[in-house]
Image (tube, rainbow, N blue to C red; front, side, top):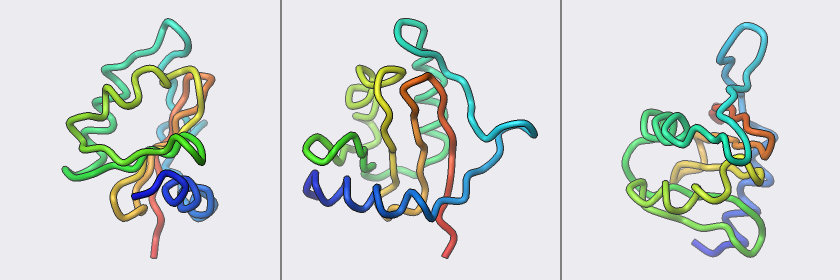
Length: 111
């Protein structure tokens, strides 16, 4: 899928997401920022939440990509805790939003 299409789909669908609460006080989960990023926590969450298959990563209009689940660490490691981005399943129904301040949240689009 083309980078601009991944970004456009993500940008329009993010407003339809039902975010799941991780704790009673917040839907956000802290994973660390800058040099304190807990990469195993981010990868564990991705591997548990998404089924096998391609994942769409929406960084920006020109640098969004589709990767196999096995390649996700290489694709997001440099961005974790530094920039905000979304990881979507192949059907753009399940999503994890990673924020540049070191938090993420999990959501789904209900039909």
